[in-house]
Amino acid sequence: MNDPFVPAKNPGPTKAAGPSLLACLLCRHKHLKCDGKTPVCGRCAATGSECQYTPSRRGYKGPSKKRRANPSSPEQTPADLAASFDPQSIGLVNVTPDWSLQNTVPFMPVATFPSSSSTSPGLTDYTNSSQPIRFTNDPLTPDSSASVPGDGYLIDIYYTYFHPSHPILPPLRFLYRSYLPTFLEQVIKFIGAHFTPAASSETYRPTVVSNVKEQEGSIEKLQALLLLAVVLHSRNERPEAGECLAAAVDLAFELGLQTQSFATAMSDGDPIRAECLRRTWWELFIIEGMLTALGVQSTYRTNMVPPEVGLPCEERIYQDGLAPPPPPTIAQFDNRVFADEERDFSSFTYRIEAVRILGRVVGIQDMVEGQQDHVEAIDARITSWFHHLPESKAELLRPDGSVDEMMFQATMIVNGASIYLHFPRSDLLSSPAMAAEVICGHHGPCSIPAFSHHAHAMKALKAASEISSLASIRMPVVKHTPFFICALVMSSIVQLAACSVKAGQMPDPSRDRLTLTIGVFKSLARTWAISQTIMRQIKAVSRDVMDMGLRPAMDQIDLTTLLDNGRFLMPDGLMR
Image 1 (cartoon, one colour):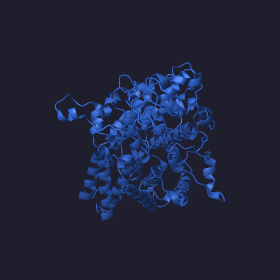
Image 2: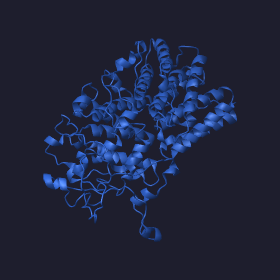
Image 3: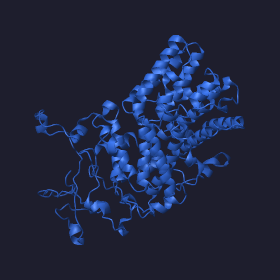
């Protein structure tokens, strides 16, 4: 797309009736009827405004007849590949590239950060800015800043497969309503490339991280760093993921994202923008909690500040672009069990609460005294989490057959926290020292039981079974957070440890669950590199347990190498 704004061709004789099929950008933004005349429409001619058109990519039917008749013609371009690949082959459904930007949502200005050095136009009030107005000089389309021609379809793939698991960016219909920084667009495409054979993520990998790090501080940079932390961890690039996470946390505190007033002050009255900012903080809180548990870093910093930020709304409200209700607070959520009337909270909020529980498990690992009381209290909080779920949240499958991904992750994280709490205090491992090495990465008093060893073992096994049951939900597993891989690792190790206690005798239900888990690893290995490594090692340990009746030695799984001496075994999969 050499010139994104191209004059429309003469439409020829006008029809007797019916609206114009062409509308200029200015009329689209203002939701005004456009007569489609070129080179200047009647409305722009009357007001003296600059009139520009952008072509639509709707209705593309694949290669031309000439190309189909000439298979030996020059190589297909990335755009041809995008149009010809079959989404069903990898579980993708309803991926229809459409970048015509339907004018169903009004243009919404966004506010400027107080930083004078910010170069993030996405946070600029263009009415008072000296910067060039991007939407009149360079149209906002997926290919407008493409380093790879024709790769705009990767944004739609990102929103179909990754965004529902980590919904911090604006809804797709709002993404191009204001300027989208090139570095964030490239991160989106980098992630989207993992989900399709029509593109390679390695095309973007050499420069995608460095391009983000060299930017001035802004919300868009923070979002890019956070998304990169998730994806790099899933690619088994854990040190790089840790660097991105640390930079994201530093930037969040620098901007003041953790304060109650930030979202309101920086959204300039735009409710969608305000919700996006609140979600960015809470997603950072969640991802840092999971990666801290996984040993990527040692301190859970976002958990050390007062939880002032308002809680996110329900996904359907945000994704439909509706104005959310006034956000409730963490204090209101915590007091819900004592209130006379029940109040509804979003699935995202229960996901936040699950990570808060996990953070408490992480926080007691180095305690020398009083740990038993904390173990009992956390165990009660885990059980209470399930008891106080409203009926609407207890069922993960919606009436239309879709899955509530936020509640899916919340359930996964709570059960993972239960394994972290009980497994090292159980009788499932050969010694307390081995339990400490696997779970916490160091020796210490964390393996001292609060209940009997057997009681801890039963609680760990119950949680492992619950995580396995999540894998049985019939939907493309690639749509789940890649942290699901880590949760399944924990579940598998607990069940294999229980099997080894019985001299390798694996009951049929356990064997079936393990078979399912390995199948999920296999499916996710096509997308995430860490799953391929884990699958091979879990298979090897399973063979040893079933054939020889030995306890699974943790060095056989090589989790120390795989997870870089992570504090917990679950870290990769559990959290997202």
